[in-house]
Image (cartoon, rainbow, N blue to C red):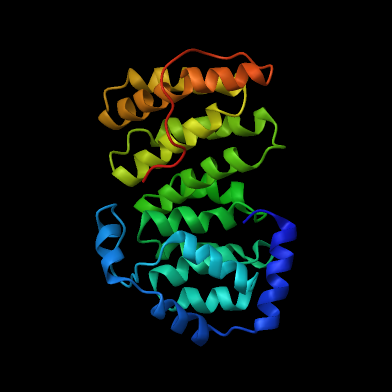
Length: 259
């Protein structure tokens, strides 16, 4: 959803269709699968207000609709799980306000809504300010949102200088003692994604992980051990060397995002 030309074409289609919130919600309900809801629950996804629609089908619908700020707000207000994910897909980051971000983040009740919607948040002018603020908040999904955004920025912003990620290490170190599953996994995700950007950041992330591994907190030790497996893996080291950036050392690779 980051291809601007695709967004413009999708927006044109959406305007031509003139889809209303009532029409979109009716379509989502026709796409519902109670069987899928049960499967989603096994992955820790909330079942309240959930229709059981796959992310792939939601992205396809988002391409039909295009960018639509007004419709995104209406879908969010429906409180339907998939409608809120769809709202994040069609939202226009240029029209998102800080107040809207605060309202939406307070509504997060599932890791998948958090991770999908924070992608649009990273493309607002307020992203880094919100990362700093939310990383210090206590609400589980607000805190997760901060580290999901760090992971997204580290993965997608190819032009950012290494130095811009340095402040994030302090946030990671501070949050690494949080034992809540959805927080510690997001902290781990952020550390891994930063450490895969360049040799310098790889070395820095490995050093942070080694410090966390020595702490007397289970969450910190898990975050560290899991991150070190990927950041020192042959796959990551080979890629960094291929880019002319030798880095740290060894072991098997892991997926980018985990609940």
